[in-house]
Image (cartoon, rainbow, N blue to C red; front, side, top):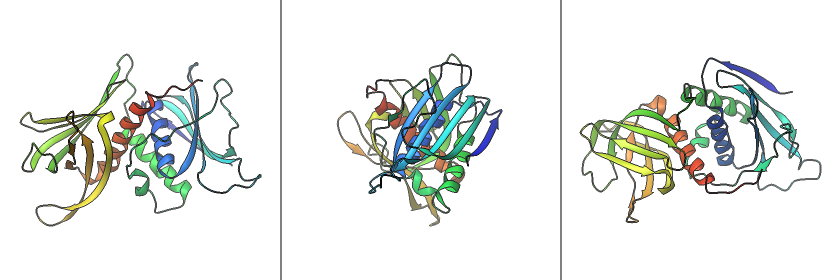
Length: 259
């Protein structure tokens, strides 16, 4: 029996929430299918997942985990249950298999303390908080900012820098991650140039272990950089999921899918 949760008053861009669910399942080694119907007042997104790389029996090959988002940005339901792979409950739109286009991020590895269903609900709860108030009518660019410190890894900055911020800029066809410091220094990284983003453990100045994010990218001269940024612990998972989302969206834009 499916478990259903209703979410009200959060003003969430449902397309972005669906994208983050796809990324999470792909990184968790699932084969993922996706369908959507955005023609009416209530939008519906169906994400189906089955474990990839396993020998399946005739009876077991069709079973899937089905995640459905239905409603509007300010009032929608999330349903998680089991279904039949390829059986599309969004009758007006076909189901297609998501190509693996994400980056080697570690967001899925951060949700491993409980069984799969509990981890998935925990992930969804975190992303609902991160994506609150992201549905903006009439704007093509969405920006999310986080305070951070720069630690090391970028050749043009030779020492740590405090009191900066990271800006995740969603813009169709031209998304970027911008690391901006307080005295007008910045690194602007087009999403398509990012090769990897990961959470690492690194000691701070007082020798205390801390979780930070390292981003690997190549600049316009094809030189590789690995800058490391330190965020508040309560936003690290959200920042990593946001970077993964930007990169995946950018790569998906280059893939032609016939609906």
